[in-house]
Amino acid sequence: MDGVQGPARAGREDRAALARGSRSVPASVPAPASIDAPSLRVQRSFDELGELATRWDELQHHPWSDREHFQAVTASEPGFLRPHVLAVAEPGRAPGLCVASLNDEVLRWKVGGLTLARTRARVLRVPTGGLLALATGARVRLVAEALRASLASGEADAVYLHEVDKDEPLLAELTRLRDPGRDPAPRLSNGWTIALPPSFAEFRGALPGKARSNLNHAANVAHKRLGGEPRLCVYREPAELDTLARDCERVARATYHRRAGVGFVDCPATRRFLAHALARGWLRVHVLYVGERPIAFEQGLCYRGTYFGRHTGFDPEFAEARPGVYLVVKVIERLCDERVAQRLDLGSMDTQLKRTLGGLPQERVSLYCFAQRPRGAWLRASRAAVGWIERGTRAALGGKLARKLRRALPG
Image 1 (cartoon, rainbow, N blue to C red):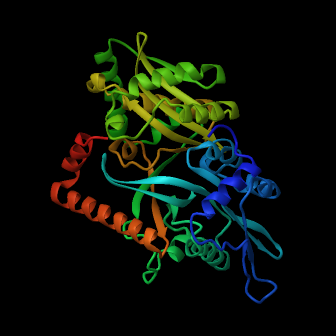
Image 2 (image 1 turned 60 degrees about the horizontal axis):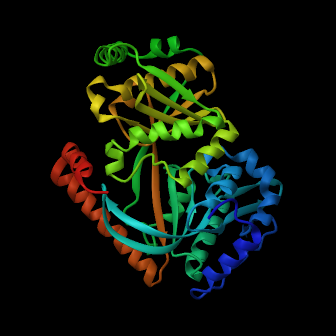
Image 3 (image 1 turned 90 degrees about the horizontal axis):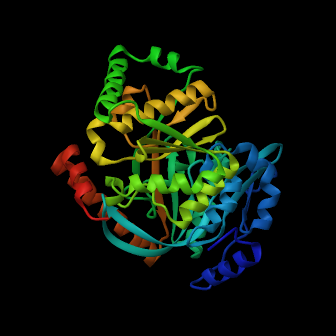
């Protein structure tokens, strides 16, 4: 599906999707009797989203829930049916939003790189950063009721929230113990962030002595193993798309991420995203070279004062030189000295390097809510089985062996 899906096309596909089962979808959730209580309306077309543009632009703080990204990239992804944005209005207060999209997709239930089951489903997806100004109890309850209404009516088989802060009020509302549709195996992760000072010298000076020593050692090892200082290129211009995609792919196809079915892949969908991010001035791709050969890369997005690390990878042939560590340090050095961001978001994977760099963990949760119908029950059972297997594997093998097993499993 190429380009932004227009309202007419969205309407046709939406009607086709709704025709596949029993559908009685409310346009809004009734408000309580008090005239001062908040009310909610679901925006299901791009025409309707236009009236929310100003408020959405004011609130957005993460690239995945950025309005233009939603319309230009999310809407072009395979399986996208239409927007599903919940707008909460309240007398005397600015509205709050829950950004979501309705997708027809195949859910792959995986342990490591091994897919145990596949199930086709209609899923309401809320991206990271998609919950905007929903802190009050009344607003949270309205949004939760609207999401459950979509599940009850058959509009969706599941709702999925990706990497939501653990303290987000909506999580508590959606994970009540007596709710039969709640996720039996929510995924917990740590989001690692670093405050960036005005200079790299200040950043290094704030690290413990052992951490500074480790970084010096990593740089010395890289220089020794690679025969001098490797060349670093930073790509950020639209005309550089072909070069950066080609060189990142040369590295990525040799990494364990590729064997596990994750990480960077040079494909049309990836190129659409990269082209959009380059045009908006968000994207920075750092590639490390030995001669003309790329050996490591790091991709990130500069967005509203935060640099969001995205895909990384290094050629395992050069593992002893620790090019990944060397590159991350160089990225931080450039970000500090160029003052393009005040904060670095290192993503959710917990590593010793992030601890060494002074990262602050923030607990995040990814979870589903399932419809109380046959397909929803099957999805919930699949989720529970995968969670049980995953917990058993970790308990039986321990962290290090489990990581080795995940790398060995086919994608």
